Image (cartoon, rainbow, N blue to C red; front, side, top):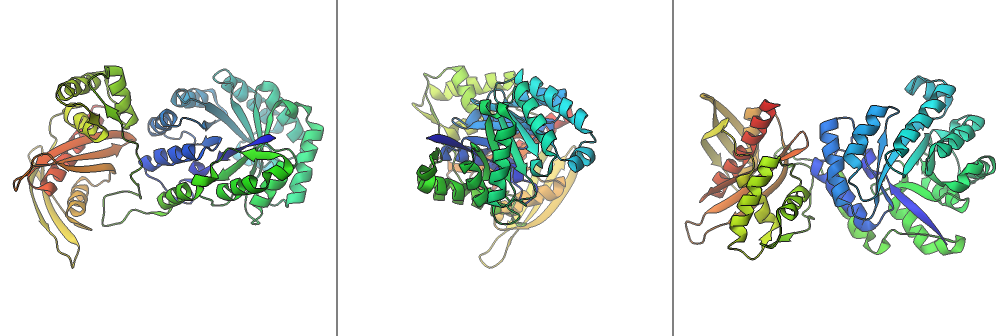
Length: 470
């Protein structure tokens, strides 16, 4: 029985139909990995610093699926992408190029001969990095067939192990697509040594049917999306293969039993938008697996756990976190993820205070929005901000944003009690992202709003200090 690989392209839709926070771009691949899709495709690198960190974070958390990232037809793009991807357990580089006359000329400014040479050279360069290279023939169904056959042969001879043909317009009906696949196999003998894949637009609401028709005619990999926009539906095609795959000798690895729960989580993140009255970004549900460390763990294990939390620490900060960890581990049997966050916030990157809290005034009731009036001091200058929010902490953070004139992604917000009684101290950890990098701040106070503001400003000062140094 043939195994059909499902390659999820949900992440490649971001920015077009919906936007995700940095944290959500890490969480969705983790959910897809639990769903056991064969391949998780990520967006290409457009902002080297931010996107490289994003790809590295995904690569370190995905355990079972192939992680695929596209490259441009340039040597520099290959090096940057591979440096971000190489730590993945199963890395794949993708070479995407238009093969229809119109797109070759207007999108790539290349004639057929030049495009063919660029594809060959790029695939060969990718194969020098990894054995898993995919060639994606964009707009294949509108290309000159003789040229398409030549491109596919050259791509496979250059080292591509997977070749995907795209019906970018979604104009083909299932029987037409079946004939198209048959012609490929009949005219390209090299396909017997490669996996043929399909990407299909849902313009005619026939993408799922076309995918099944293509599988019946020998396609072994299907591009689908957990959150469907205009392509094959991952839940539809995987359930269909689970129910009827035996009848035409195929199956797939997707765990349909867990499908509903995971698809709902992904859809919730894709559909939730940030409220104007809250500093919190798109809907991030608490799905992070808790880690436990003990005094028996060495420095390498502790710092790897810190990295899994999303931090990118310098060697000096790593040493400070390790020293702080040892002191706490000497008197505690187990240190949890949240406690490790507190250690990082307290020990890593202790910097001079650019912003100092002068005062805050917050009003809240059960009948109207909360309002915060914040005063911060920066190099002797008094700065003021006022904002409405869904609650006192929301309004306080938004007032600080109004002072700054910018929004930092609020990656996480943790509150816990550190003492007992009427004058109990509350501890808050706030994690902010700037340019993809995670910064955490810690605050303690008998007033939980006060501790939250302290933690936010602590993280903000770390961002301000580091970005001023760059």
